[in-house]
Image (cartoon, rainbow, N blue to C red; front, side, top):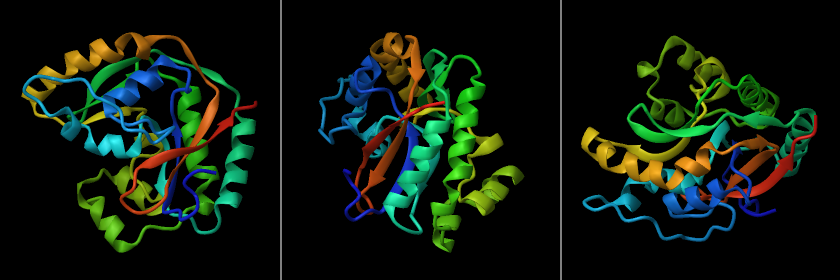
Length: 230
């Protein structure tokens, strides 16, 4: 499997299927294809440095987080077996149309309507794979700025190693860094024009994606796409 030889972290993500137009266009927006690792040309936005504005999401690849990146307590094979078993229990479902939106100051693709099956999938990924997660060290906890979190976020950080899970979880496909209002006014119309039609088309969630990071600071890659069964 790709990216597991000197594994740093693993994550469970939703990502559009390889033949979904959103995979091609969203990867081009970020400047990297997480399926192949290839660098891609990004659209030009006069007066803005889009490669700089997308540096963080480019490293993680086009995705929505289900279980955030974590260090393994044991081997990849055991974690992969449990992820495959979980995927086999989950029935495929329809994803609501996606749209470009502002979320806490950065641009992201968000679902246009609630999707209980999607939230249930994220909850199951966090809970069922947690035995494979190494607890965060103190430096990681401090980096999360627990003093700025809600009580629920602090409890999630303590129990699950990440604040934005369960009731604090929000589906989002990150497209940029946090933007100033002036930057958003320039970037959002370009992102909507490039991604809007592809994002809003009907699609099924039929896979659970395992992303891996080979070493600290390295980009994440799609290691496997596990089919949902149900």
